[in-house]
Image 1 (cartoon, one colour):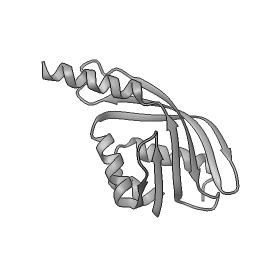
Image 2: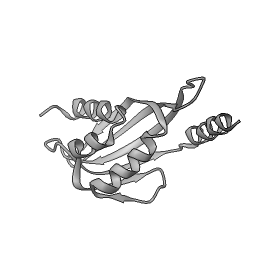
Image 3: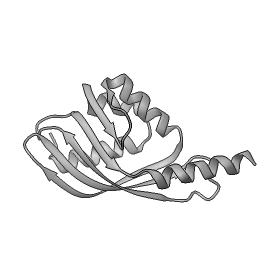
Length: 137
């Protein structure tokens, strides 16, 4: 079993591949809960996979750069800069968003029980809208 920091790097590398169908069962408990940036809570593999699949379909790439990790007996607090490139963006502009996430996970667990992510996705949402408007012209 890798240490928590290594596990976190592997978790995000798998998520950054933008393949929710393989990522969710590998890293999320069957009854996991996801609270993401003010969006209603998603519960269980099907809802979490649907949430991420919809977002991944809008992206050309995503990369998490972890900036801080604090491991407690029952959870992991971590911050990251998330870099996105929106699909169909002729500029391939890199949009960066800072995030703070809390995972319900003990050091011995392979899967998270919950994820609470705090971020302001406005720059990504606004650029996605701009790219969509450009493609309609």
